[in-house]
Amino acid sequence: MTLKIELAALGMTLAGAAGFFAVEQPLAAPAPLERSQAFAAADYDAFDRDFRHGREVCAVGIEKDRLCFQYSPLEGQLLEGQALAAHIPLLPAEFPILVATPAKSNDQQLVRFGRSLALIDPETRIVEDIIRLEQPSFADAVAPRATSQDVALANRPDRGA
Image (tube, rainbow, N blue to C red):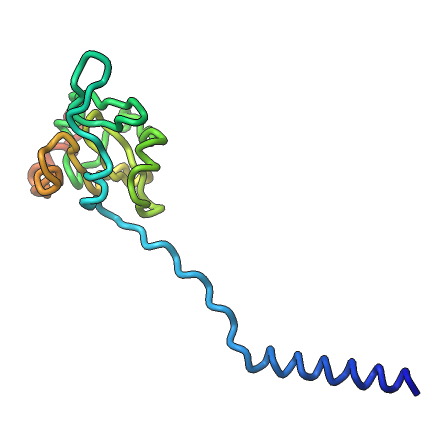
């Protein structure tokens, strides 16, 4: 007799749990992180300007990590929409830079060329966005969109980029 009562109690508990889970809304999956596909003012603001690094004044970098960005001749040649030459390595930006800048699209690689950061599609090697951190303001730091003629000239096979 007690076995029947226990089985009945177990059956009612299972029926109640089944009813609860049938009516209960499934937990919502967490929303994916919003990832930008272009540089924003927060990227520009993440870096320090005009601080002392040893005996020199550093134009731009990350002061707390003693990271001072030096000029690179390559950064002056970067254009949005340009496919980078195969001999130019796509080395990810240093860890402190990755930590300082908000997350970007998983399809892009953040690369530093001197005092400029670029978002590059690693498969096509196309420069999708550029921010020139040595500029005095965010508006000045965002590279103007390259014209189709600029990109065509930059992507010419005979150009020794």
